[in-house]
Length: 528
Image (cartoon, rainbow, N blue to C red; front, side, top):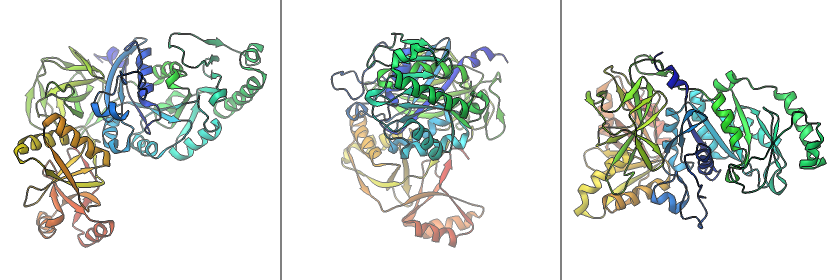
């Protein structure tokens, strides 16, 4: 393997969670340890006008939520870490699902107060589909939350994954005194809002040591001894192979906002997390150690810099070495392209990179050549498989409020739907544009961005559709007849694929029963 050394020092992962569990805050703390930023800005605090480093769209600053996946690269202990911070809000779930196709492992943040929430379940299902290795970080231990044993039980039952505690908290809420590292037998004492550099770690090889009583009090010391004995008896040592196969998740406790318990997790992460893996394509398995370059686009983001109308396509490198100014083959368009300034990211600031290896995420300037799921190779033709488009749940007609700006509206909606924020369906026999989204907030974002970035005013009219189904059939004549009869409910997606828009579950089931020759799909694989 020519690039073995480079591949083995790379770790690419995403942080996922329900909104408000502390994901963006955790991202910032990891960047602090990596030396990538010097000061963390609290996302919600109005006193610090800076905003979190990883939230860069105006609407994110106003709402204090992340709506687009940010990509950040930093080094820690000579390991190059590519970190993808995903939106937690359920309306942006699709962006998150697709980001999970580009990473090798995941850190799942759980709020100790609320436990497992709806969005956490859905995200975990996507990880299950791919057997992605997961590390769990239980956040907000400095708030009064659920009992820690109950919390572990709830996570195991709700998410269907076996857990393995790596650190253990001493109390929680106002009584929170610190975490004991079960792995290297050390105790980190908690003092609220101390800086990242301040070391407050005491090595306690033997829990019977009276130092423990002196530091945390006799009652808590005895409780910790009991807990640790129980955990050792139940869990034993962590087997890294079980973690890598996705069957066991190591668990860490802490408080991200106080930068507490984060370092223990990061140290374990760089030790056990998987390096980039081989991937399936439509023709064969691409081995991570192959010399020839390959990669796929998993996200497109327009107007990262509002002053310049730029679009950036995010590419995950899967094999070989990507080089600046070298020609690569764009499989879908069947043409060769080269990139003079490929970027690596630190939220909004970007640096030009000369080369990238498997596991890296590179930003490519895009003038409209890329769609999600596009593959770049050194001449071979195939697509990476497993990049899904999901059926939307809310449908609205796009209405132009300013006929003078029709061109801008068309361009804007075309670019925004290329990003995969929403799906665009065009009704047959007309130019009625229907936007399909997973959640309401997406429509607000589209409306806001069309106005701010393209100067086009629009409004949305709600349509009575329940689901979009992609249609395929071995008998083209039958499919054509069906679409002609169902003209009111027939449309095409951006790639010209026929879609049936069902008014309700009853209508959908009736059509499926009445048309045995037509297959109704609820997800569409990008590139069949």
